[in-house]
Length: 496
Ligand code: NAP
Image (tube, rainbow, N blue to C red; front, side, top):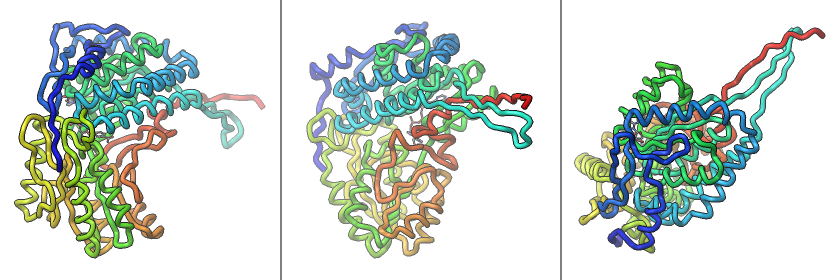
């Protein structure tokens, strides 16, 4: 590992940060919190303060909900083509501003600039995809089985939506919800994570500039997340709650949403297995492992959390993976050549320290890495652990860091049982050159998504989501817009 920790504050960084709005976006206006409260945004690479943004209180939350509610009927009546064109313009603007948006993201979240640029493009792609879906909302017309009546089926916007998003993909987790909501004709109140509000605030201005009517998108940054969001969810004027974050918070929100029976989409935690069979292409598997593990420094719900490798190739796999992980350059994401940024905060870094300590206490071996990096910022060394026993906590909890724990297996049944031995079910990765085995295993794995001979599943044109305690509903793909549409059926009496 090479480390290139740097310091914050180049002129360009300051200029770009100063261009980002710092208020709450309510009813088309940027405004301070009613209480005047602000909160600081920190650079996780240095611990330095980047910006101060308005910190909403419950009264601001209710104002945002009122604005979304008021704008709903008018927005639902806007022509689908017009809604699509707003999204298309926002897509173009994001791509035209990719460098600045990526810099803001790297500064507040830590990931290397190249990864931030990748996320901006991925996030923008949801707008392009849903700009195309906006004009394809259809319905149906059918004859009743007895021929005596007709059925008309129409799709209508579900109504005002509440979104709560995490810090790990500060733009994409937002556009994955905002894109289909706008396409379907729904208004929005969104709360980004307190660590990374700036990316969402910058996006808000882009959407306003793209012609989004006042009140359609309302952004409230709030450090008292529960205190501000719970009254909005329980109010009943919002008709849909879409959350991306941890399973624990998701369960709390589901209970709150049940009071007024809101439609819900939940993109929750993961515990992905990465299975390498003895007939796998080893080079492909190692390359896939680097992506599945190291995208976003391991801070992804889709991150490979547990590696199960067939005994006959486990030594070679661990060797090659450790070589690649050990060669990664760790440092402030703004610096040239850096491949691994800091973790998002002290809590995230300390969790990785605890999980690795627990695995070592249970008898795991460090192949490479195994420690945090001294100095400012929340860096952790890319790590490979071998001989990781089943009972280690990192087999059961999301690591959310650059640590690859490897265990061996002997039979396909054993690998499947290990992969499914979790309450989560977001994604699993499988490496094999056998078509029979690939399909057999894909059918038996309990997850919403499978990466087959690839370490990356995320794609705006594909249905993303989990089963079991990883969530409800799907984002992206042709089903993504359905989450924002109600089905209304009209029974028609007809004289033939
Ligand atoms: P988190 O702690 O659950 O926070 C997610 C969001 O929920 C943040 O905006 C947070 O606000 C807010 N929040 C926390 N408590 C709340 C409450 N009582 N009421 C309303 N909002 C509340 O998760 P995280 O640590 O930010 O993100 C990591 C988790 O997200 C991991 O479990 C990861 O797997 C999951 N994730 C899932 C997907 C997916 O698509 N399945 C994608 C990305 C991440 P504050 O932080 O500002 O308090």
